[in-house]
Every structure is written in structure tokens, then in C-alpha cells.
Length: 232
Image 1 (cartoon, rainbow, N blue to C red):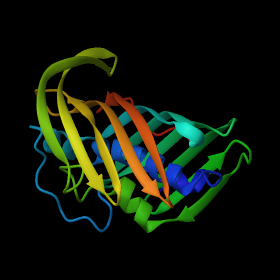
Image 2 (tube, rainbow, N blue to C red):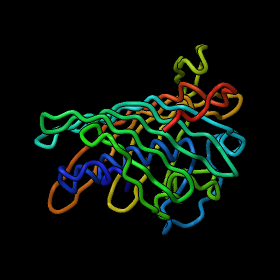
Image 3 (cartoon, rainbow, N blue to C red):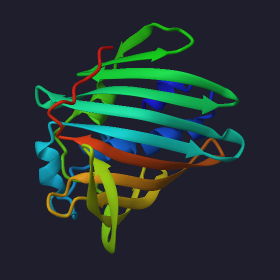
């Protein structure tokens, strides 16, 4: 998972939980699956599959935190713009761990992944086909993965999208994949199924260590004609 690209100083467990949380967040926008996962059934949230199939772009305001002895905080912005049938991504994140804070900028275009960390100031690029499938593929639109379950709730939440407050309906979600378990609430526009916000907790165990990552993600822009990928 792509957090390992710029989190080499952390334990394997914290990388696993943090990356799982962010992948889960991005999956709610692009709906992509790990290569090993079976093709899922259609989403149980009305309109979500159609809304995501038609999405031209989106922007996520993201925060992922972990606690305990491996405490960390990742926050920032993710921008995705569909080009040639797939999403190209731009991520600008601030990562704080072990008393150090780094600014990270990453781009994903096709199978090319480029990452720039503040300490270096130059992009390091690599070809990573698996990462491209996870973050840019549009072949598996419709669900988080085959193990995800959604349950509608009666509550609503006002979320500002494209500069205007929207009343979004709530669904609980539960997903288990590769030794990680995610539970939380996703909010969508009832008329279209467009995602508004995700609040979730991901638990993972690796190398005898357990870690919990808490994610908050807001789709602050969705199908915004003025949204473009920033210059790298």
C-alpha cells in the first residue's frame, strides 16, 4: 500500500493501518479493489454506483490519526480527475510521527507514481502497476469490496460540497480485508448517492503489533467543472 512509500520510519503495523484507512477512503471515491478481490455485487447504497461511475472529479479533505506508542497524524487534500477512463491523483499531505512533521506531495498517473518529501524537495518516481490498479482503475465501480456491508440509518448530516451545505443520509459500513477491519459511517446525498463524508476506524495487526487508525474524509468538491489537477 502506498503509505509505505513515504513512511519508511514507522512500524509495519502503523503503515498497514494508516494505508488501509486511506485506501478505504479513496475507495469510497474511486471504488477500487485490491487485485486479489473478487468482483463485488452492486452497492447497497442507492445511487452510489451510478454517481461514482459518472464522476468526472472529486476533492477529499482527509485526516487519519493513530494512537498509542506509534501515534501519527496524516492530514491534507486528495484531488482526483478522470482522464482517459481512469482517475489521475494528486495528494498533498502533512504527516506527523515520532515528533517529526513532513510535507508529502504524491501524484499517480497510469502506472507512474511520484512522491516528493519536504526533506528532499525533488520527486522520486516509480512504476507501480498494483498501486495504479488500486488508485486509478475504474473497472470495479460499485462497492468497497466484496466483504463490505452497509446499513441505512435515520440520521442525516449537513456537509458542505462545492461551496453549499448538503443534507446527507447516513449508512453504517463494515469491511474486513487482508487482516484489517474497518467500521464507520458514510454519508451520501439521498437523491444521487454521491458520497459526502466518511468517518471510520480501521484496526490492523502485523508483526505482533496492533494499531488503530481513525479516518475522517469530506468530499468537499465533486463533479466541480473548475477542479483540475495542480501542477506537480
